[in-house]
Amino acid sequence: MRKIIALLLLIMFFGTNTAVLADPVFEGHAEKSDQIRKDLESELFTGQVEHLERSDIIHMTVSQVLDSNINIEGDEFFAEVVNDVEGDSGVIIPKGTFAHGRISKTTEAKRLGRAATLSLEFDYLITPDGREIPIEGKMSTKLHPVAETGKIIAQDVGYTLAGGAVGGFLALNWLGLEAAIASQGYTLAGGAALGGAIGLGAALIRKGHEVLIAPGDEIKVKINTSVPLPVYKDSALMQHEMQYPGLEVRISNVKHEEDPFGEANTITLTVMITNMSDKTFSGLDTALVNDYNAVFRPSIFGDTKLMFKQIKPGDKVIGDISFAVDNINRRFWLTFYDRRNKKALAKISVDNAYKNVSTKTKKKNDKVRTRKVNFKKETDLFELD
View 1 (cartoon, rainbow, N blue to C red):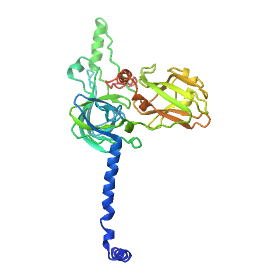
View 2: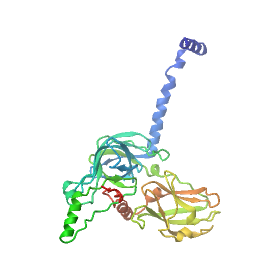
View 3: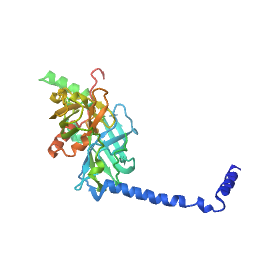
View 4: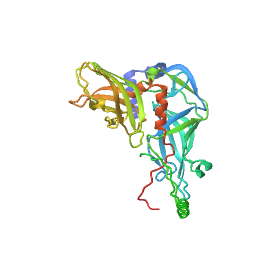
């Protein structure tokens, strides 16, 4: 009855010309959407297409802890691309692209020092604008039998991605998605005669280590198929910055370093600051802020000259400043604060600056970040077995 009354009211309002209610409302909308998509793609892409080849390797980090002692088969997780993947003509996979995966198999640590293992599978990528791209991928932390028997703990593990026409990435900077590892070898105490026998007995009953992969740990992604991808314009991948009138800041170098305890968690910036503003700054008025809005103040383990130097209006300084962060692979902004009200005045993208860092420095940074690759979990000294 309500439908009949509604229909009668519509007829009374529009008359008998029902064409008003028909297709024209939708005809223009589809054309407009197509045009918006084309305009957006022209802003993001150069029009060139590169291929992700079989020999290419992508560096990723997991977004949550994977622990062989806790996680079970079927648990889902995400991994994130930690640096831009480039072809001959430019970037084809931007930093921040996600891969969705799940744990396909787990094994427990066993006697004779046999380690636990995690086997992982991937089924799709998530582009920065949220679209899903089908893939196939596998990874296992299990060593080759020869390597395991010989106690060779140096290990490069990686995802193998296959299938799926990965194309049309849209890197929209305004859109996005949202455990320390101890890697050490076992040393068996041994000596002559009786000492050696005791060491052998301990080895026979000792269980292998558990596996733990934590955010910040890099894993290598090896591609086993050729995938066509569009090439991004440099301007499409630039991160947003906030400037303060009269304050000019240029980051000329970005180094990834270990702290005094051997953890790769320090970012050292070489900065040139020209202060023609109405404010006085020092290193204590700065911080690194990541894409999760976590704030990291200058580290006392780095160069502290710039940290305590007063940069007054009219001053120009050059120096290094270090920051200890929780995950060296995130996006960061060097942020300057008003020392009175603590409000952010300027934000300079470290990722934008990193594009101009020398290849030599980037290779050194890669070595620092990927030094620990066997994902060995810290042994609990109070755990009795």
